[in-house]
Image 1: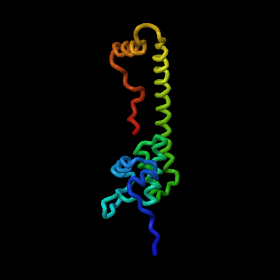
Image 2: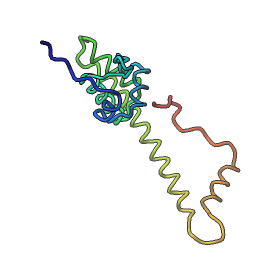
Image 3: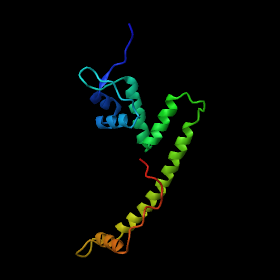
Image 4: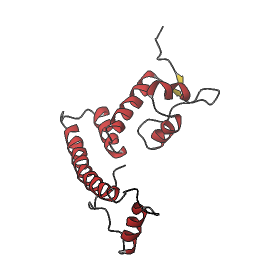
Length: 152
C-alpha cells in the first residue's frame, strides 16, 4: 500500500500557503508552479509539495523578489546544478535592486518632507496643493532617477 500525499483544493491550498487562489492561478500561468491535475469534479488538486513550493514563492515575494528572480531560484532548485552557489548571483542582482530602490526612496522621502513642510495650517487654501500646482506649472515632470527596468 503506497502512502499518497494529501490533495487539497485551491481554497485549502491558498489557506495553507498564505497565497490567494487568484495568485496561485497566476503563478501556474507564469510557470512558477506546474499546472495541477484536476479531479473528476474539475477542481485543481495540490499536494504537500505544491503547498511547499507556494510557500517558497511567497517567501521570495515577501523579500520583494521579482517573478524572474523567483523563477531563477526555482530553476536552480529543481536542476542538479553543479555550481552550488549559483543562487548567489540571483541574490546579488536582487540586492543591487534593493540598494537602488533605497536611494530612490530616500530621495522621495526628502521630497515629501519638503512638500509636507509647506503645510502650516494657515490661510484659506492648502499650501501642499499649491506647491504641487507650482511644480506642475514648472514643466514636464522629470522621469524617475534610475533608468532601470521596473522590478516586478
